[in-house]
Amino acid sequence: MSFTTTRKVRFEHCDPAGIVFYPRYFEMLNACIEDWFDARLGHSFGAIHVGGGHAVPTARCEVRFSAPSRIEDRLALVLRPTRLGRSSLDLRIDISSEGEARLHADFTLVHVAQATGRPVGWPAPLRAAIETEIARAGDASLTQGEAPHGS
Image (cartoon, rainbow, N blue to C red):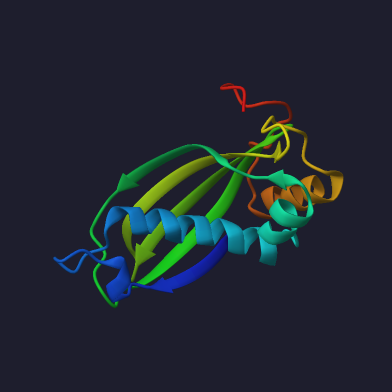
């Protein structure tokens, strides 16, 4: 089962041509990830980053743009976790509007200690919540260990 959230394209998201200015997509993508952590994993970014002494920065982001989004379009952002490592997590997010693909993004997040900026293993409750999400997504690619790129 994937996580879906929606966003309406507002004037603030657009360039003078009335289409989404590409950096604004990155804000939407990050908001989707933050919403997923809070709603599905039960761990808000505030609790992780402010109260917990950890952070979850993006180590990799690959994006393919398929079609422009315009002011007042309603976007569906669909997030699927695809792989969990010791300290890394791969996610896939697809954005569409009325069934038309607009953007596909693959992310790798890394759980780090704020004091050192170095990767640390996911805390057991958060790891368990992510594993549950991967199982719910029906993704048979759940692997243990680190990502090949060492995140």
